[in-house]
Image 1: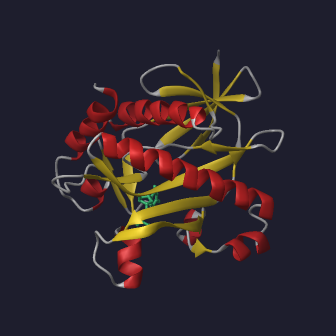
Image 2: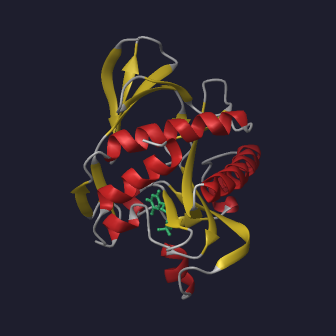
Length: 236
Ligand code: TMP
């Protein structure tokens, strides 16, 4: 597989073309941003960890019946994925109050919900990824009604699997963000990443934060938290 020209550079990853028009290579960076890019920094080793954790979880999710863009890990930071066009919706599932939910509704962090919540943000940096509902997404033609139903079904399935799997490893899955893409034939698949950048993970016993909130909130020991997630999930 030949790595050809760079197609895109995001905040945490670069995407390259390959000699197969249906396959891309993603390359994970150590760059970290928060608050729509206002806060910038480096989390040493993050790219390697997020690549490995994402691929490990996506392979498990495939077995659970959630189709993903994953094809093959090529190196510590590079993965071969199916070419998708990203549906411009950030899909956020929450099991426990935290972050923007707590801020928006004026409640403390740590309230365990009776059932998970789902919300969408319109993936648009210029607008600051505003919260939108299904009707807005349809009006803006970001996805079809059928695609939105499929995305919701997969997102809740990811939650059921991931919540139980993390719990087995002593971690509470607080919330997370997913992105989906369309293959050339229109099939919806899980894309982007599932990592400490895009999930909130709290140690079940100590409630210690093991995710990017350590960077967002300057809590220190950011690298240690990412390493701990890799160790608990993959034993590395
Ligand atoms: P929030 O509480 O800030 O809305 O974040 C909810 C979840 O989504 C949390 O696990 C972090 C993740 N997230 C991203 O992956 N990217 C983002 O740009 C934001 C704002 C949140």
